[in-house]
Structures are given as structure tokens and as C-alpha cells.
Length: 221
Image (cartoon, rainbow, N blue to C red; front, side, top):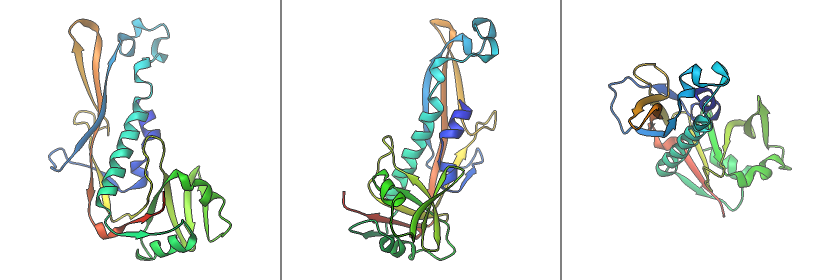
């Protein structure tokens, strides 16, 4: 489950992040799932495969947590990025104008609607293109490079959102017992003695540090 979550979660790639001290206050949210799992997850003798077995209930939990984090992050960006420009289309001129509003030294991340996937990959103007490194896309506009994250069916959005590393930070409260970024809570089930009620969650907040370090490019739907 933890490995699946690590593969699915984009937030620690997309924005700066840090671990929170247990006592730190703030408007933390809990993004998680509650599942009922059988004894095969904890007791080898219940498993026909021994240590190699798994409970089908946990498949997809890590992916769902990653999607939940992404939805929360995009909601926070849409609520808090106040600077805007309107554009008729996504062109090198549009993006150059947008990026020019950030200091030349800023590391900018772009959140881009999947509707523009082909536009950017097939652009005839080579001043604007997508390049890949280790399967990770980078948007290049003139001399500027931006890590790009696409919208998807689970996390849809229609505007291009640009934020620098100074805009905000992702703060996670680790599990107080294990120090892991995911918190696990296990409870016995009264009427099913061999089953366990499992809650797995991330406790996090995306804190806004400098609103001027974000920009939305609004485009026709």
C-alpha cells in the first residue's frame, strides 16, 4: 500500500514539502480511506500463499490517496492563485507573457489541462515543446523550463495554473508511532473477531506563503 501510494502521489514532486512537528498547528486536512480487511493480511496461517499473500481490499488504496491529495492541492491553487490573464489560445506568446511575470530565477511548475496535451506535444513552433526525462514531462517555453502536471478524469481543471516554488508548501504530519507519511489506525471488529477495521490517511495542509508567485491563464473552454 505504501509503495503504491509513493508511486501515485505527485504532490511532493509538484511543490516543496516538509514534515510537520506533531505539535504544529494549522488547518490540516485528513485524506484517507477506511477499509475492512481479513486475517490473511496479518496472520500467515490464514494465507494460502504465506508471506506473499495480500488482501484484495487494499489494492488501489494508495492510488486513491494520491488522487485525493492531488484534488486537494488543485482546489487550494484554484482558490488562492489570484493573478490572472485571459488568452484566446495556448501559444508560445501567451505562455511567454505569463512566465515573464515571474522572476527569471524562479522555478515554475505548470498544471495544464489534458485538453492541451496534443497542442503542446505537436506544436510547430519549437520555442514551445514538451521534453521528457525519466518519463517526467517538462514544458519548455523559450529559455524557461517548467515541470508539467496534467489534469485527468479524477482531477479535472480547465485553466493553466503556474506557481513558483515560493508560492506555498505541502506540510505533512507523520504517523506519531512509525514516522511514516501515511497514518494507519487499526481497530478490532466486534462481530468479526478475525477482521480488522483499518483507516489509512495522510494528514496534510498546503500552506500559502506568497500569493504573488502564482498565475492563472484562462482559456476558452
